[in-house]
Amino acid sequence: MSSRQTILIPADPAPEKYGITEKKKQEIDFLTQQVQNAENEVQQYQAIVTSLTEKSTKLDAELATAEANKTQALNNKNSVDTVVNNAKSLYESSETTHKESSSAEDDIKGVATEVNTVINKLIYSAEVINKLSNLVIRKKAINPLISDELVSMVSEASTNANNAVALTLVALESVFASQATTIESKSAMSLELLQARKLYEFIIGRKVTDPKDVTNKTSLLYYLDQAYDITSNMYEETLAASDDNADQLNDAQVSLSKSEVKLSSLQAGLAAANAAALAS
Image 1 (cartoon, rainbow, N blue to C red):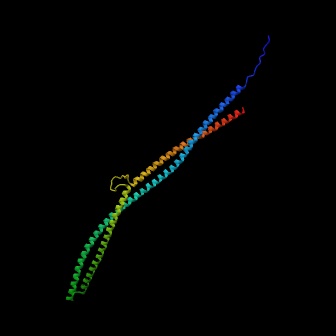
Image 2: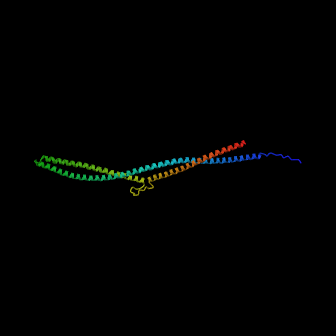
Image 3: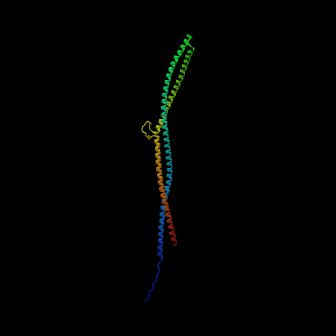
């Protein structure tokens, strides 16, 4: 019986090699997908950062405008407050001056009355003295014994009385002139007081005689106060939006930075895997 020789045939190494190659291919495909996902993530964060940056620029411009409007509104408010104080001072001063002019007019009327009384008495006295002087002169002509000194005295008295009347008439004319000036001044003060009161009332939006210290909603003062409140609110809202956008932008930039680092790491891993595949 012959023995059959067994021939050992070496195994084909191809399946093992094929398995290694397929594994590397799967690894490369996985890494490639990871890189693509990371690239998409970077693009998304970059788009967010770009959008938020553009919004930040816009908000910065809006914030600068809002701040300028707020500052202007505050300046207007301060200006009208100053105008209110000045208008109030003018009104009060005009009121005081008007009262003083009225008092002065009353005083001058009193002086005129007194001067008129005095001049009437002087005229009467002058008439009496003149009659006495004429009587003495006539008596002197009849009776030489009458003293020349007496004649001289009564003549001088008559002259002085007439001069006193003349001077008092001048004084009375001055009083009348002052009275006319005072009346004109009082009229001017009355007009000034009226205009000052209307100006003050226009600004504060109410009658000065109104006991309620409430600013009317149609007044200049109210409008400027409202304008300041509105611009202040707009500034605060814009500032809040700007701060919120800055926070979002900062978070997005952090996320973008992390995603870029991740992408770089995955790209390096993919490059190494490709190099290893080519070397095998």
